[in-house]
Length: 225
Ligand SMILES: Nc1ncnc2c1ncn2[C@@H]1O[C@H](COP(=O)(O)OP(=O)(O)O)[C@@H](O)[C@H]1O
Ligand SMILES: [Mg+2]
Image (cartoon, rainbow, N blue to C red; front, top):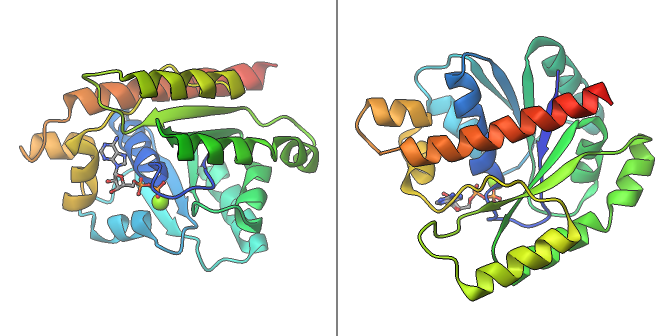
């Protein structure tokens, strides 16, 4: 089933947060998800080790796998689970190029910053190479992360406009919010945080559910094409 690569060649843009938030809402919708964490920092795998519930989200440590091992891990996971998410280190390297081969969708988190936009464009410049290597198009979109939901500054607007000129952008955004940080702090899903009274997650959950709907629509569209 679909393999979603959450990728960027920059760190700190929100890749791991996006991967975990999406998994959290896939789980809440009653489905299962398999994450392969290929980042040596292992933030998702460490989350999983401490996560008490261990139900409907499986996270595999992929950072020491060879490319062949990774390839078969992704393949096996995609046979077993309705969603597979691959999280990568924020750097342009063989690993991320390789990970693009099996993906059905590339989600590129980006903050509303000029530096992030430059790195997104640098990554997108490789798209022709990536698509010719896999011999089929790779649907891809930027998702804006960590913006202040209350104000749209002039700089934000300019960066977002420039991004939209370069690449397709999800209309859903994952705004700056404590709920996203709380997932990592308390080792819980968004749904659990609310149930335990640790964080108000309603807004974040709406944002993630909306992003998930867009993702599912793109994947369905690509399957029908
Ligand atoms: N939407 C958000 N709201 C608040 N904090 C966020 C959000 N997205 C990411 N962060 C924080 O930003 C930092 C980098 O995010 P992370 O997902 O680890 O990025 P990456 O995986 O791309 O390096 C983390 O401290 C994370 O908690
Ligand atoms: Mg990360």
